[in-house]
Length: 251
Length: 327
Ligand SMILES: Cc1cc2nc3c(=O)[nH]c(=O)nc-3n(C[C@H](O)[C@H](O)[C@H](O)COP(=O)(O)OP(=O)(O)OC[C@H]3O[C@@H](n4cnc5c(N)ncnc54)[C@H](O)[C@@H]3O)c2cc1C
Ligand SMILES: Nc1ncnc2c1ncn2[C@@H]1O[C@H](COP(=O)(O)O)[C@@H](O)[C@H]1O
Image (cartoon, rainbow over all chains, first blue to last red; front, side, top):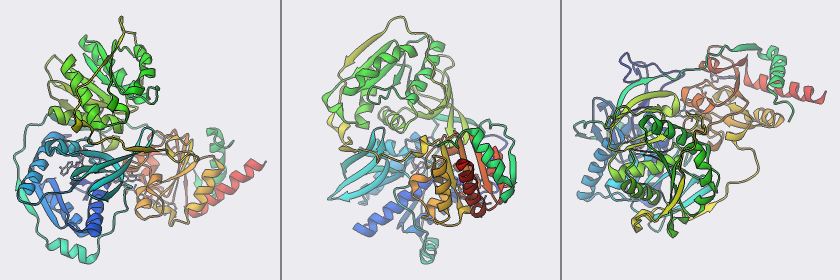
């Protein structure tokens, strides 16, 4: 499951109504965690057989992110079209779970449901967990290593006291973190295939949000004045002085 | 009653839990309600006494033999059980990996919304939604939101609130209870733990971090950065472009989907200053930039800058530091 988000560069600009990021001049992507989720799915299918479906809930334009995932190797793409204001985590999870249950009832049951640990923009840390509960499946989050051994997912993540290892029989929901793999760059044939592939579309009515966005704000930045120490070699002497003042030259 | 789920690290109360309790106490005072805490598992005992100083009047200690190894679903079941027994108006946890995970399970079990990583919470009149402020984009953006639900569930962003002791509650009690737990709550439970590799200073704790971005040019280009870090007793970090190119392992990545650092000085070389990178360096006390582009966005975050090529500036800096040290 992936979510379309803008690629913000050095700074964020908000729309006048403070409801969204002004995306007029921006490109779009998905969270690095989700890119890794797609890569992990594609690798598992390469190793064990099967197929990968990629799903998103978002505006019609989110088709672009589905095609990106198909260029990486996903076989099937589903877009839950939800124009209008952003859905909260609970509503998003209900919609996703419904589609997954429909696929199951149609004979297309998933062994593994992969999510990002948290979405890039909303950062709710919950959609995967909520989907797991709705489908009565176990769920492990924060996963940085995943292996499938005899129908069991053996996963590893960081915990407060070291690495935690979990062993959970499939089917299971897993939320991954960037670092679990290094996503591939899609090949040219992959891109061409993805361009022509079909995207299934569904429409769902926006529910009333239970976590209701009022407005967005930029955090107060520290007012900083940068001191240019110099151009190239001319800055070195001052830099050494500065490091001395900061007190990191003693070690 | 406001209920706080307190994590415990072998008897030590972690800072994010104390920050959460500080926000919880403020809410409790506003509402004229007591502040209670929940601790879970057999090793929770030792830290409990420290909670009184934060204004906690009742500690509920969930005890069950099966709680010896962490199980997110079982922790959520403890919270849900206590919710049924004591009827809190809000439940808070720290916005840590564990806190966010357990609260999401609680939200999923109860069907209630969860506001993750809040920096502020305003209760309003009884029955009203809370007005919360929460982090988006890992903290690059703030959202004001109305949090609905009969019981308000939220986590408190680490380091958004300063942990402060408060007036101790008049009466103080610690009580054990046996939560209602089912086998299904243990479907996911730690099978075993592995120690983190010891030795090197870790990025989040390093006093000096030397960061490299695309401008470093190649994996070998990091050699001089390593040397600089070594000289200053620090470690090397990097941007996401660098990990995506396979130049450095992801464990070195600073930023929204990497590590958060808080050094005395962050020396950022050939890094443009994308918000997703800078949010990971928010804790840095000073930032020294090396960049060929005097207009790079990172200069807006910098205290000092050398405008120049990493490949020339960093080796020159290394020599100059060696020379100064040898004097
Ligand atoms: C949801 C999301 C999460 C992300 N999470 C992270 C994250 O955790 N961490 C992260 O770092 N990024 C993250 N990113 C990516 C981020 O947006 C930027 O793409 C990335 O940080 C840019 O890396 P960079 O500064 O190395 O490269 P660039 O942006 O390409 O900048 C290179 C800089 O090097 C300078 N330069 C070039 N040559 C030289 C030279 N010879 N000497 C000196 N300077 C030189 C240039 O002037 C430029 O400023 C995330 C993006 C998204 C969408
Ligand atoms: N609109 C969405 N469409 C598809 N997947 C989503 C959507 N929102 C969240 N997710 C998935 O759920 C994960 C956690 O999201 P969140 O709970 O918002 O932090 C994300 O990394 C995605 O994998």
